[in-house]
Structures are given as structure tokens and as C-alpha cells.
Image (tube, rainbow, N blue to C red):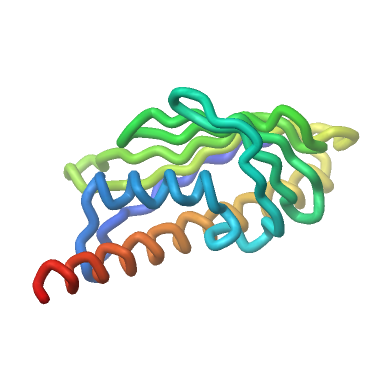
Length: 157
């Protein structure tokens, strides 16, 4: 099993300063429309909506993936990959660091079919997935910041 968790500061000095509501709106948008956030996703169709979540079919790194996405408002978005060659869970979580600063953590626990645990192939897969998701977190923060800046401009106009 591949297990990775990384936490990034949300407000790193780049303006505008983001709030929990800003981050939450971005995470929901990323769950519903991931193509703008995850470079290795080439297709997404939301096939079902339920109270507190959705089911989506995506193509990630050329592979079809079915995910059940559950929203824990203003805290966490939880993805369960139910049908794919790499199955498991992914979490995007809003939190606070030791000094009370806003953070965004992504974590995944994935098992890859046909890949031996601890093998070079598993390590390569993990490195690619980690880089992909770090990029997605950065892209999400950039998009949220852009949206927040646009909203601030409309309010002051």
C-alpha cells in the first residue's frame, strides 16, 4: 500500500489572503470539475449526486477511475476509488498548523493492482502520484486565490 500525506500552508504571503470559505469552495469545484486542477485527468463525468457527495467517472493518467466523493463541509473532501487499477482513498483536508495558520493537507492510501508492495514499480507510481497531487493542491490554491481576488475587485468597485 502506498501512503502519502503532505501539508501545505494556504497563506504563504501571496495575496489575497484566503479564508476557510474560499478554500472550501475551491475543493468542491475541484471535486466536481477536476480537469482544471489535475493535469493528468483528461475526463470527468459526474454520474450521481447524493446528499453530501457525488459519484464521478474520471480518466486519470489514461486509466478509467470511478470515485465516490463525500463532502465534510469546510473540513474535508474524501474520495474513495472503487473501480481502477489503483484503488483506495484520497483526502483533501482544511486544517490549522501549530501556530494557527490555515493549511491544506492531501493524503492518499492506494493499492495498485499487479504491483508488488515495496517494489521499484510501486515507488515510481507513488512518486508520480505524489507529484501529481502536490501540483493539484498548488493549482487549487492558485485558482482559489484568483477567484477571491476577482470577488474582492467586484466588492470594491
